[in-house]
Length: 110
Image (cartoon, rainbow, N blue to C red; front, side, top):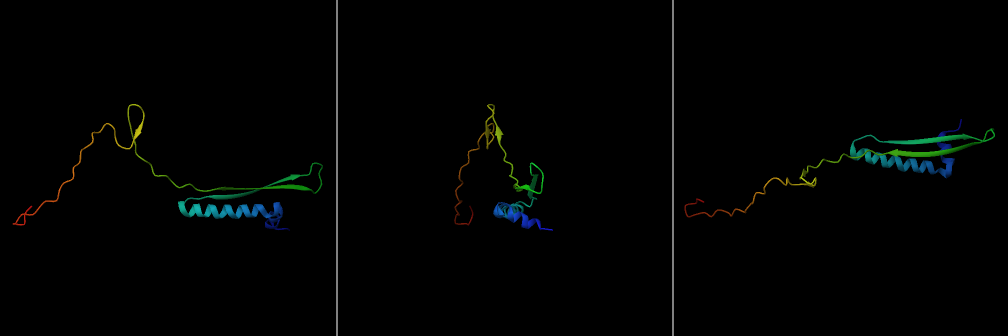
């Protein structure tokens, strides 16, 4: 019995093997980065000859699904117009002033 890897190498001069190898490395890197699972799928469609006989047409398809990293949520505040703001538009701003460094008097007190 002929190995499936040999058949894959004969399809389009081994292109499915190259695609699957690149997809596998891509998915493994994404799994390492996210800690989530991914997958690589190799599908072989086998079509018989129109008039029967031993001739077959084989179509190889490589698909991969990389895990996606979670995006941290962001907090926004809405106004009456439906616009979003990073700072609550209904809250008054507190004016902040820089406080100077206290000076020491001769007794060592501020």
